[in-house]
Length: 85
Image (cartoon, rainbow, N blue to C red; front, side):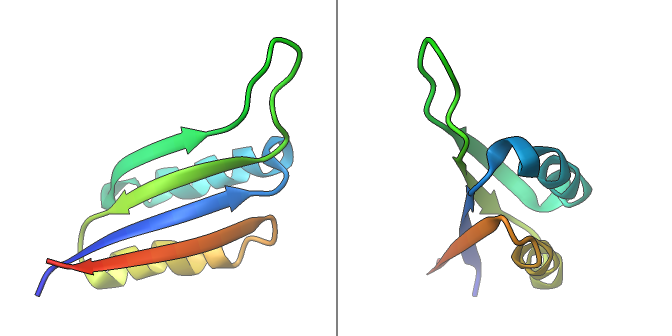
């Protein structure tokens, strides 16, 4: 059975967390099929928080390694959806 895994990643302090998160995502880039970044923007400032949606693809041990590493980051909140297809 194949699984489609979607991870929602909420950055509490985007300005501080983004560089380390970017490095982590780059290391695991081979299992990220789709990445969407969302944050509030106005004429005067960017939001200090943000949300990233990741669609994962690949061997379960590789997608789990990414999820495990994300869960070690203190400024992130992770939500997961798994669809059996």
